[in-house]
Image (cartoon, rainbow, N blue to C red; front, top):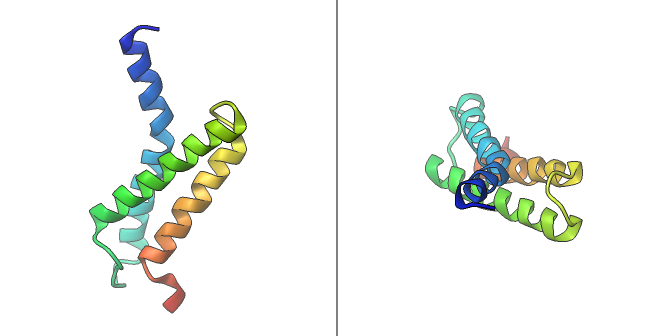
Length: 92
C-alpha cells in the first residue's frame, strides 16, 4: 500500500466520528441555543471527536475489522450521550 492509499484509508476511518461530531455540535447549537453549555463549542467538537475515534478503534480491536454496525451504533450512542452532558440536558 502506498502512502496516498494509507492516508485515504485513515481519513475514511476517521470520517464517521468527525462527521457525527460536527452534526452534534451544529444540532446542539440549533436545538439548545438558549441553554448554557457546560463547555465551549470547539471543546465539544474535540471531545466528541476523540471519543468517536476511540470507539472506532475499539471496534476494530474487538471486532477484528472496521465497518461493523455495532461499532457505528455505539459511536452514535457515545457521542449523543456526551452531547447530552455538554448541554446539561438532565436539568430541563
